Length: 531
Image (cartoon, rainbow, N blue to C red; front, side, top):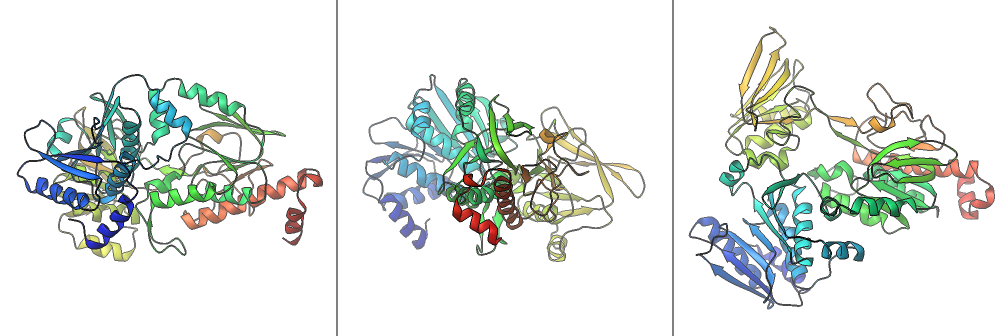
């Protein structure tokens, strides 16, 4: 099951296990059960601390297995074979159950322990989903810390009938005690905020006591991370407030064009960004959403939690999100057939009919990926022809189960009240309305900047982007911006990083020019003078 190289790597990790682990496998005579047993036996052979037990007559999902400390109830279970993106979740579960320290703040660990109640979580994932591991790993570690929490991670592609019965049409989808708890990427802090009703008030109170920052970065994506590093290296008080560190990079599958990094994945890149920022004295305040900017001699950022942060300068790096097509049915059936991430949700539509809206690189790449999973793909493009690179178009044209429709305007996404069952588009050549029967719609028409909360405060372009000058300065003195949220063209990670660094330097330059010289160190003064 595991190749020699992977076994060698895993053996090195398992040397960190310090206490006995019992893996109990629930299997039958199917090929997938045999595949699971082969995997677990490979793992067992790599550590003297691990014992595998096979069971066939129990009521658990098959194939599945629990991971627990010897002699104690097991709160962690995988239903399926956790390879792909979930192999890391499996390794972490083994290490943490086996005694390796959990990388959470003591206050967070204590908050998990103090949760009052019994929590039975179920998470549906797909092996190709880059967002799912964070949810699986978060709930696994919570189940390990608090014995009243139990978690089952379920491969939706393997348990297809169960997915259809529970109408799961997007991953990750979490159930708590049999009811839908949430969908999409979530970490420990986000989950705790929903479980602990007092968590928001506690966080808001703690934030109210923060001192005035020299630079406050709003947003934790590549632009925000770069701004934080460059600001902190100047020795000034730096803070980062963000809904989630990593931003939209977390939703990116493959990164192959970041200079000096030949290939990586979005979540890995986001983790590296956060680790780099944490090398400096930066106050990171995550799971917080900015709600209003109030400029002044000391700028204020009001958060959705009610807290207010203050700073002499601000760097806005709130990024962008998937653009909606804005037709009836889109929001009603979001995560019930309408999706925006083909890599994450594609496996849930195995053998079904789907549409991809958008003929640029993203849309064509999505259609190509989905064609290998689903029965039929209909790609709908508003323009006269596709806009994707020719190499992608050639690949698309070679696929027998893909139909391309150009000069078509999507007008409605239809459903039966529970899930999508069709799409209506207008043929722009004839004006005729046409319907496509299908089960899924993947929207791939670009991005929209996250600037609604800034309207009336800083100058925005017609597209809602923050207007910036060559130094990243906005129309408001002391307020800078960087990344996909701005008017800077070409929305690329490498450009966002450079713009973040530039905005931080612009903020620092503003500070030294508007404050008494004694507040700036001699080294910084010389650097500015040279610049």
